[in-house]
Length: 513
Image 1 (cartoon, rainbow, N blue to C red):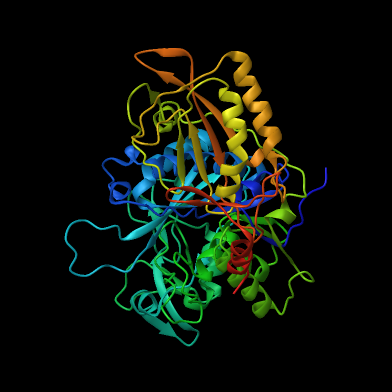
Image 2: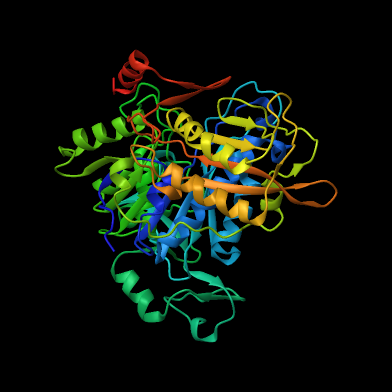
């Protein structure tokens, strides 16, 4: 199977990218999936499950994490930069996808402490580490002591340099380590840490400190021999990106290069493949290139991809299309899908996230430019849906993606349903898919989702459904047309067909600035 090129940045939906990565190819994945609440309701931690945008985000995230686990090698691991307000949901999803036993640690990255705040505030980010298996790559890194730590720990010096002293004995009754050495014997209940030969060697090397007032000798530990503290799980030595500093690209959520370099050095080795499906300004990709790793990144934002390409070119004197690849979603979709099926995860939670449709009750969501409701009256529901499907799909493709529901009254959002026999349900899936394949430029059929939701009263109502088409948000600068050559865009009041000059103006609007 032809595989997508690596050392590449794709301006594309992250699932379109992940679905085309071959299984087991990635050693380290860094996922920092943005969540931007659309309303005050979304931001309330006590009732997030009621938020439609949050529901969609968590469902989407479960798909991202399933794909991420698939593409990781047996030595692979995931570093997930978690949104504090969603930590509980995210841990539940990660435990289900990766397995609770594959949770390794959570890394605390402190934020600047806010002054004069009312009520509790989150003062750190959390990075969750999950592995693909027990044989994951993990390199133990050490960090140097700060000047303050050096002054407080290394208080003695001689002609060799600064040193500190540590006990030569330890707790425990070990007869083979309870001997007399240089006229000194360990106190009761303690034993020498070293054998007699090792103690003699330390003495010859001048590493024994004898107190001037007598007492037990101690071991000298010189500063120039100290390799540093293990970085541990509290990373308080890595500062945030400073405003107007050399790393500041004025992009929300930007992470410092030092943070990503530490993650890469811990979880991978030179030559390994690093994946960042939400690469933003490309910090993980820059860190990978600087540390001899291969890399693969994607982002929907044209601005983010532009910054990433510029950083790679200026930092490493590289050229796009010559030293690395920059491609849009259309380029990516030339490559075959490796896997695009998803398991149902999160028993109970996923059911709670799925919208249920109750007859004669209004939906919680409102009709906006991201949601379109249509009621079907009379006979031939299949033809009614088929005739309008491609127009609405094109309108959403030319806008920001969205969902079309047939069986919802648009005047009051009340569920009325669509009567469909088994044969008609099968026909809807077939004829709508055929219609959508005629859209130009072509979009992979797997990018759409056609869902038939059963309608409930107290129980399921036989043969009554809400028909939903989910349209992805695409990042292409192309304008999409129906099979008849019509271009549509979504408006708050429905959809609008573009005519002559409007098409030209829309093309101009889409050109990179």
